[in-house]
Amino acid sequence: DHGDLAGEHGRVNKGQPYQSSAGIPFLISYPNKVKKGKVVNTPYTTIDFFPSILNLTGIEYRSNDLDGIDFSQVVLKKRYGGIQTATNETQVRFMRSGMWISAMTSDLKLVISKGDVPWLFDMTLDRFELYNFFGHEDYSDRKDMLLDKLYEELVEKNLMTDDMAK
Image 1 (cartoon, rainbow, N blue to C red):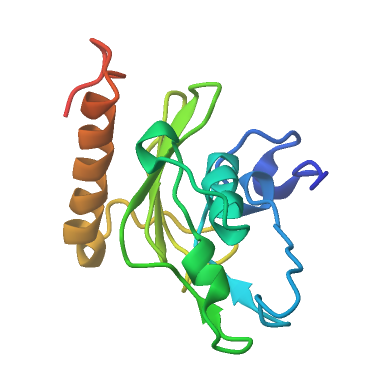
Image 2 (tube, one colour; image 1 turned 180 degrees about the vertical axis):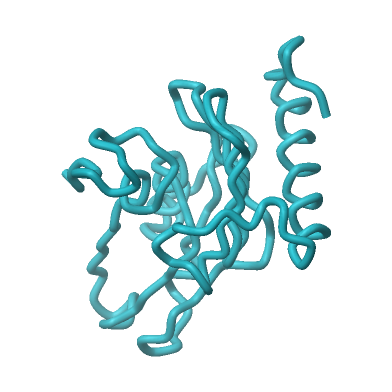
């Protein structure tokens, strides 16, 4: 268990979109396949483990039948010890409780919450997620790209509600 927030960000429990609450380390040992010391910082969720582990173990499956992103090729890259991200592709993730949704790239995280203002975190400059860059002019284009991606995903998965407006 990765623990509660314990007062961080003025919060006590988990279930918040902060890295210290939502981020869970994933360790893998696969001798002769995965380089020792390999670090990947691309955000993945538990639905990504199933297709990735199937591919790592050579079990064939139809990718259209599974949700999730297969990250096995990122894990297998031979570059030693470097921090890697799969792509610069935007990943959209939904919290099960429906309290917030999030879109992430390798360096930005946009969070839209039912009970709070929108948040935009620069994970490179502010890894503790203390500063909200949502209204910052320098982030306008990238913020809009993330908002568009969230909207597309909500429409595609038929999750739009009447109270959600673009």
